[in-house]
Image (cartoon, rainbow, N blue to C red; front, side, top):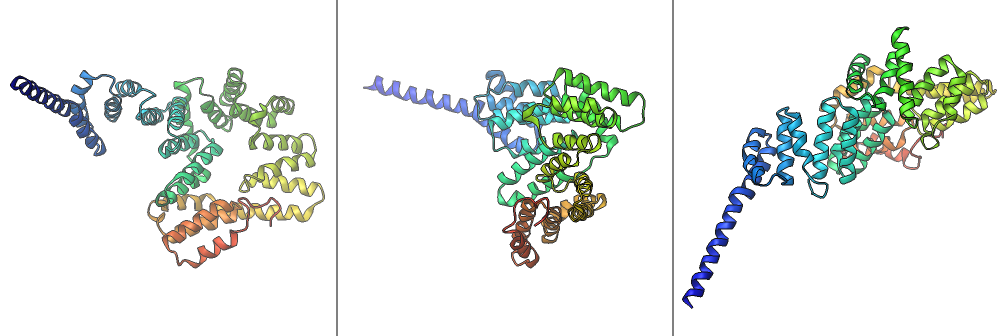
Length: 409
């Protein structure tokens, strides 16, 4: 009937109008805001999303983009407010956590940055950006083993075309040095903004302790003791206190080692235990076992290798001691400070070249880190498949373990 047709047409027009309204007020501004964000036009993002968020204040993607726009404009609190409105159930939650973590790191809030970046990884285990930021934080806090672990995760997850960049991050995690005065200044800001940031305290105290005797020395010890009282499971604070005690009070060092959390007994524990046995107990056999355990995972640790050589000489194994001293000399030559600086400075222009990648392969091979060497040789061959020295390097290491055995092949 005519009435039915009129009603149907009216319904169609109403639906079309609703769709047009939705496109104009919802989808289109969001689409344009995405493009503006990709181009870094953050003021445009604000103009586009303001009306949308007035109508839909809990819109996840709009809050994510608006939060990023506010952070880009250095309006930190407003940026965090928008990012916190992104619910954990949304597809944008991991990215929201990442941007909060990156902002906290920029603001020198180390503990808050780590918390948010780890939340990002929990929501999106594939995130390379979160790992990169964590590696950066850990480098400032002298947590190289953790930085190295995150960098390795980047290497293993990076697409082939980006693997060389991830390997370069690993190289920095291993060997890049931040000037002590810069590290101290930033760590002081970390600790000033969060007195309970145990990682910042554990990194800052040794810098105080290594300075002139007096108030800073006492302050370092006081900081670490307060941290350990609050967080007795904090391995970093305990390790830093043990290092001081080994120089001043062997009884205190032994007590701290006895109370070391069993699940946290890493290389730092075995270095300290071996040093105690060697320096204070006159027990080179126990020290040898400890130092060997460290070198099984850190063949480039020249200080521990020297201590092992001393133990071996005391035990009458001169040939083995001489081998360890030769290996120590090789390691120190490979990663001398000026060479590492030069490699890092060259990375931006050299990373894509076969010569740079091959040189990193040779460096890691000389350290006994064969897994990394194989990766670098493979990357050199990606740049130049006919490069014979890299092919020979891969062939040479094909049957080798990931790390050179402590006593050599």
